[in-house]
Amino acid sequence: MPKIDTGYVNLTSPQELERAHQDWIASVKSRNKSAFSHFLQKRLEGTLHAKSATERKKVAILGSGISALNLTLDQLFAIDKCNAIIAFNKSMAFANIAGVVPTDFVFLDGFSATAKAFLQIGLDFCIRHQLSLNNIVMSNGLRGRVTTSQEAHLMSIGATQRLRQGCSALYSVNMEKCLASWTYLAPKSTAITYCDHTPFQQPSNRWASSYDQPLYHYRGSLTHVLNFITIQYPDSDIYLAGVDFNTPHYFFQEELAEYADFNSDWTTQLVTDTGLHFSAQHWEGTTMFDDSEYINHQLSLYGCRLFSLNEKSLMVKHSLATYRDIA
Image 1 (tube, rainbow, N blue to C red):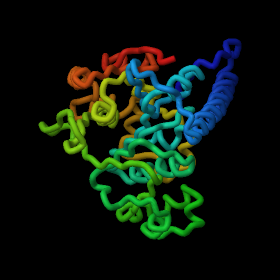
Image 2: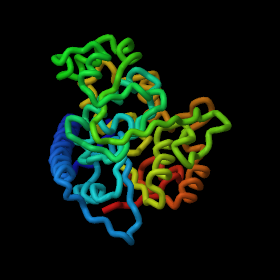
Image 3: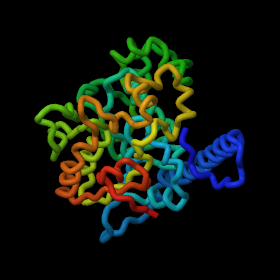
């Protein structure tokens, strides 16, 4: 795992450095969980930050990259003041260890059994923390397969209430078979938006202006998240947290061990071998960054600007985002 600056400058042996690194990560996650609890309590109490009518809207995106653990407390408070905080794919399920309370959840990455399982794990996270979101964005293919009734959900997977208490036990039981007819359990009082995204190689893969059109998608889920923002939150400054692409590791790498039966898919070995996120790898002659100019142009048409909180992110290197602090 890449080393994050821990401040331990007098340690010399690899064992000492690794131990200090792991201690530092544990302390950051503990701090972040406390921050998450604070922000969540404020959200549940309805004591949200006042938003200036003249200030540009701010939207934060929580990715899964390791740099999410580099966020300072000042940055976490600044993120919490954003007009919207969007988690996508796996990041929702572990938002507490990033210290971020999302307002929106985008999950259109539903091709593999692993992805489908993590959609429910993310929804479980929202239910467990009583999160009422602004939007949950799901694939059109899930229409009629989402419920707010736990009984209906349990019946659809043939699970007992006892199994429901342990995610690993539940989702590892005939997962492929279960997911084929799974009725997803979603939090109550949350709007669900159903839409599609276009396969990246199709000529019709263009930026959508409404949910009636398939969202733009080019070699990575971030691209359709950006299209979602231009529809839902136009005229915004968008800040990327944990959107790195230059490492194979997640900020929740250790926590993934709890989900050992479904924490990998067909891209996992490719990511391990190259050290790059799959979207940044050359696959079928393309990377996500090939369409940077088009993406930036579309963002500008909707009055959006894209910033990264990680100056080493490939988003900055490939001029898709500008490095800028949010605090």
